[in-house]
Amino acid sequence: MEPFSSPEPGFPAEKGSPVPQKKSRILVGVTGSVAALKLPLLVAELLKIPGLEVKVVTTERAKHFYNAQEIPVTLYSDEDEWQLWKGRSDPVLHIELRRWADLMLVAPLDANTLAKLANGICDNLLTCVIRAWDLSKPLLFCPAMNTAMWEHPITAQQVEQLKGFGYTEIPCVVKKLVCGDEGRGAMAEVWTIVESVKRILEERDLPRQS
Image: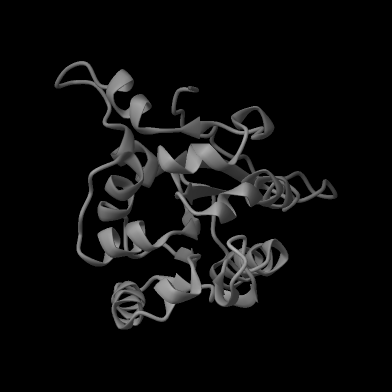
């Protein structure tokens, strides 16, 4: 796990020299949906965005769906929260991560974590980061679950609750699911998610934090 460090102060570009690429930081949260299989591809595509630094926070259940060796960025899990903190003066990881990030993307957001976030539950590293999230910063979420779960009335209530916090939904889509059912509930395509991130970066002109 790499330490947190502040970026070096910038210097004005000399006349005629290229303008430095502005950098931003995105924290990707991944939860225990089968759509977590797409995490390696999602991270790879995000890294293609110029000036974007990526870190990932995973739930324990999400680990079943991807190979950590295929994730070429820092990957945090619940274990790291407690390894980093040993005493009162030590940094608290979920607070350090919310300070570090300029924006957050939760993809996929499974039904269980959706319910937790809507009700303020924070019982793992990811949900603690989101509970402490700075609401002036963008947070995008990508629901992913079985159609039967998606169509349950409580799901719409919980999605609206998150949107009421100011979070942005990247809607799930209709397709044949891994279980064989066909219907709405699949996570949005990776390219759709990446384009949404690009749009947020352009609209907000997000800087790298100091």
